Image (cartoon, rainbow, N blue to C red; front, side, top):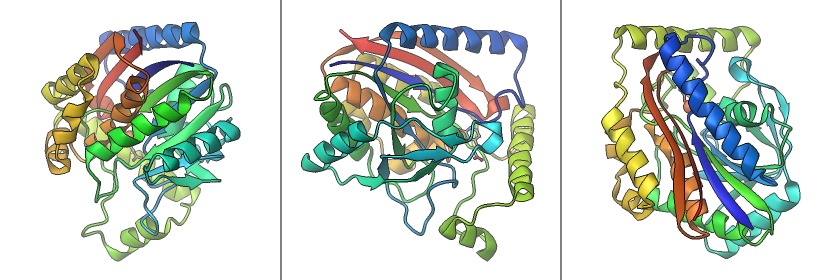
Length: 312
Ligand SMILES: O=C(O)/C=C/c1cccc(O)c1O
Ligand SMILES: [Fe+2]
C-alpha cells in the first residue's frame, strides 16, 4: 500500500460570507494544489476524519470516535445530501484491526454526517459519492474530550490497519484550526437546548434555516470585530502546522485539552482530525509535507489551513 495525507479546513460560511478577493484567490490556489496532489496520488480509498456539529452525534451517546460502515449526509448549510460511497468491506476490516490493536473504537452501520465530512469530499473530489471512503467521526466539539494521545493512538492504529489493505490510501483530516463559532454547549444550556443536544430531534427546515443564519451573522460580527468569540490564533495554528510538518506528532500528547480550548477556541478541538490523519500517514514511516497554506479568515470563522504530505 502507499499512503498520503491532506489536512483541509472546512467552514459552512464559504460562499456565504466571503473575505476579499486577494484572500479568496490565495485559498483557491492552495486548494487547487491540494486537488492536483490528490489527483496525482489517485487514491483507491479515502479515510476521512471529521467532526460533527450536532447533526449526527448527540449526548444520549457521545463516542470520542466512531467509524462508519455506511453513512449519509444531512445536507446542512447547502452541502450535498444523501449517501456517501462508503467502502464497507474496508471499513469493517479497519474496525476489526483497530479493535484487535486495543483501541476502543465505536462503529456505526448508519452514520449521519454533516458539512464537516461533506465539504472536503466536495472540494477535493467533486461530491460525496466519487471515491470509496471510510468515514471516521472524531469528536471535536462536545465536551468532555479525552487526551490527544488517544487521538494519535487511533490515527496510528487506523494507519497500520489500512497498510494491510494493499491500496493507495489517502488520510484526510477535515477541521478548522483555531476558531470559536457559536456551536451550542450543553453545560448551562436552557432545558430546550439541552434536550436537543441530548436527544437530537431533527430540526424543521425553518429551525435549521434560523440556526444557519445565526452562524452566518456570527461570521459577519467576527469579521467586524464585534463579538466576544475567542479570536483566531495564527501563532498557535502555525505551531500546530510546524509540528505536523516536522512529524513531531508525539509532542501533541502534552497538549492539555483545556489549553487547546484556551488557545484555539471552542472548536479548536477540530485539530484532532488533522492529528489523526497525520498519525495514520506516519504509521507507514516518515513523510514530507509538500504544500502548506494558512490564513486567518474571520469571515469564515476559521484559522484556515491546507496541507498535503506524502511518504518519503
Ligand atoms: O454551526 C455549525 O454547524 C458549525 C459552524 C462552523 C463555522 C465555522 C467553522 C466551522 O468549522 C464550523 O463547523
Ligand atoms: Fe466545524
